[in-house]
Every structure is written in C-alpha cells, then in structure tokens.
Image (cartoon, rainbow, N blue to C red; front, side):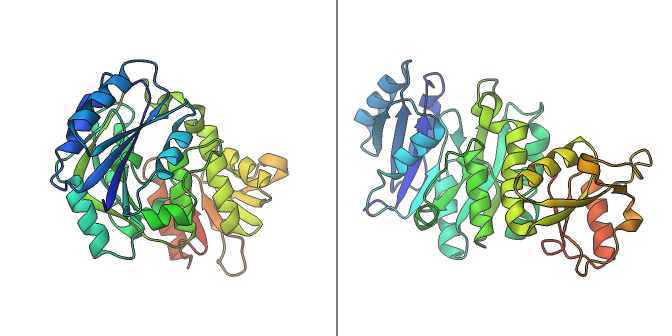
Length: 332
C-alpha cells in the first residue's frame, strides 16, 4: 500500500523529463509511486519514460491521447491506488529538493487541518518578469497570508504542492473551465474554509521558459484570471459591490462581476482626474473620503495593482472600521 503518488503530467518534454524524474527518484522519502501521465507526446518523451520505468519499479507510465493538462491530471487521479493518501504534483521541466516529500508529508501529518501544503520555490533562471511574482508568492508562508491574498493572484506554485487525496476527491479533481485549473482548485478549497499551508523553505525548482503553459495556453491570459476571480468573488459579494480602483483593471473586474450578476454601486479612486466622472454604465467615481462606515454598505473590492497601494488601501479601510474578508477584499 503506497501512501503517496507523485502525479506528473508530461507532454513533449524529452529535453527535461530526465532531470525531473531523477529529482523525484532521489527523494529521502521513498515510499511513493511516480505516475507519469503522457499526454500524447510526439517526441522521445515516451521512450524515456519507458526506459526509466524499466529501471525503477516505482515509476508507472500512463499513455493518454493528447487532451491537455486538465485531462492528463484527472486521468492520473483516476488511477490512484487504494492505499494512496497524498498526491504530490510535479511538472516535467521542474526539479524537487531531495527532502521535499519528506518535509511535506510530515507537515500534513502534523497539521491535520491543512488540506494541502506547498513550498517556497526558486525560479530557474532567476529574474525576468516572473521573479516579482515568485517573490510575492514566497512571502506568503502562513495559512492566514494565503487566505488574505488569494484573490490578488494564485498564492501557490502548483507543481510544489502536496494534497490530501480526500480533498481532491471532495472537489472532484480538476475542472475544465477555460481558466487556470490550479487557481480554480485553490479558490474552491478556500471557499470551503479549508486552510492551505506552505513551508517557508525552497523545496522546488520552478523552471521558466518561453514554452511553458503559463505563457502559451489561453487559459492563463489576463482576461481569464478576471473571469475566474469574478466567478468566485460573486459568491462572496451577494449581488452588490463597490470597487476601489477606477483604472483599467478595476473596470475589467467590474465588467466580469456584472456578468456574474453583481451590481457595481460606485468606484473609489485617488486620481483627481477620475473623481467626479463616471465609469461603466454611468457608475460614479468618488474619492476615498466618500467610503463611509461599513455598516449596511456593499462590500469593497480593491483592484489597484500599483506597488504599495494595496497596503495603503488596507490601512485606510481598517482605520474606518472595515474588516478584511468581511467588509472588503483585495483582488489586485
């Protein structure tokens, strides 16, 4: 009865799959099955997988027709063995720290309230446009931080995560919704009130390159992130909202919220050029002094991505008696 399955979907990764497999097979925690789901590769990936499987009985290869990441992940979940309690995600171009699985299994066993545990990650190569996101994500190491920031951006690196099988089964695995399948799962878990943990150590090497899905798949485009956020925010807002941020992103999220049946009552902004004007459907733009007390007012969704602005908005609203997660939420 193997208690842990490393779920590794792979598609045309002959150049990187060898190192990825090696980093898994060298784990200090060795009681696992590595389930490699080949998503219809057309290069030499399958030959490499078959060779490695012949060398190490912990590797099982599941050939599948090409259906994309969601299909591959769910195909793997349907093949979990009866003794599997944990599912560790891994990507075919990444690498694990040798003690990642050991530390994450220990974390879930010692924190029974957590539905999953991620880790901090190292970007390879460092720098570039993704580095700021990785730095922000790595700073969120407490369940409360993850919950507070979850609508700003996905707070977890998907291939760094170890999940309880019971949680995956509770939510039916991954969904094909046209947006990021991992962020969708985190938001479903969050909505159910299940805490998510993260180890403060770098236990995963996250490879960045021009061909990664984050850069090439339409589901990871900015419009899909606004759609995803609006879908879940609408369940929290209960039909009406005020939006702090009358710029492009605030208007984009407002549009998607309206598509989900949320009435936008007012925009707030500090830009004198916007205050006194109107935005979508004639909704007025007012200054921060018009926020008023939280009692009976529609919740505020803050959508301002300027560095440092989120903290200033939080300070201003808390000073007025607003409670984050009850009266307001940050979504940028």
